[in-house]
Image (cartoon, rainbow, N blue to C red):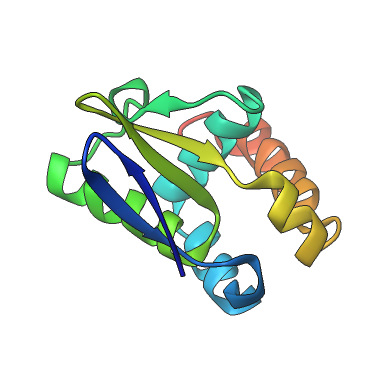
Length: 119
């Protein structure tokens, strides 16, 4: 497990070798977390603040979702000043599970077309 340090704050992230498929799939199974991943994928490589995501949940629930994504290895979070920024760990996920992220994102896009964008 590695930690990202900035402004004296650290966040734990799994090393690529410690990322497990079942944890990634669990993280991606939740509609709110999938929404975050879709937004991050659309903004490829961008570090986005938590306030960027308009999730229809409480702040504590949002914090929980970001923690699940980080601890599963789906995202990396860093502090820049007082902002906590998130970025998709696409390279790690693509190396570990080739095609998984693209397949899940494509399926989520098809589902959004079928059911509406808030799914």
